[in-house]
Image (cartoon, rainbow, N blue to C red):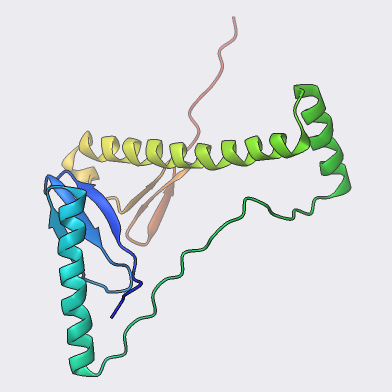
Length: 163
């Protein structure tokens, strides 16, 4: 039987190796010192999972369909935004298509960077805080800290000094 299940592969610092997982089968993971070994082990685990499901009469999960993208999309904009984008593209000496592509790329990349920076700041705050403050469930770098069901707002303490 040819399976069409996908595998995710990630490096694990803790295990010092690669971990392969199959999203459709919760709990399926396999370790390998190389990506190839992790995927080979995951294939073996998948075969065992499928056999177990079939023996128990449990329906197999449907494989996730990998969406193909053509690189083309239809975009509707308000006329005023379309005009502003076209004007900015002309000012930059690029086509409107290239300008919009760069804008989307910048937004997507910026969100990924912001997420990583936010996580690192949270990790540092927790690591460098006194033990009594490590009970915070969630630190929201954009204004609040929540502890259990209580939320605290962090006041903006910045001020400007004039001479």
